[in-house]
Image (cartoon, rainbow, N blue to C red; front, side):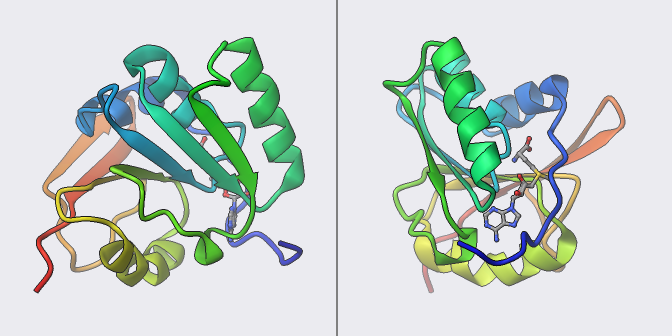
Length: 156
Ligand code: SAM
């Protein structure tokens, strides 16, 4: 993972993190993947507040260091894992929930990969950016931020 990040690091505000996980109805049985996880706050919150397990992927080793330190502080190292890598080269097929805060072009490039890898019924939540003509099941606004929610359909 030596290539340039596709998206700069901008953390999701905690109020928006909480709303994303609530919109996806995350429970302890979920496996949450944050693609481009930054400091790990989304999967750490999923573990701490809902008992979910989770994996964060980030291309920047500094972010992975921070995420691991934050997981220790939050006492959830048994539930979460952070991996340095390119989200476009990652197998996330075990996810039941995928969270995104990327960019419109990156979402569009990721869309066919999400549809191929994820099981029907898996949920996707995206902070700020939609997926073009794949209409979300729900869109909400939280404190000035838009959150989009999709469910992966049955395979054709
Ligand atoms: N998901 C976190 C959040 O919502 O707080 C961080 C979002 S930040 C806008 C995007 C993150 O994606 C950055 O930490 C960046 O390093 C990472 N990133 C960018 N391109 C990537 C790629 N190709 N593979 C993995 N991570 C990437």
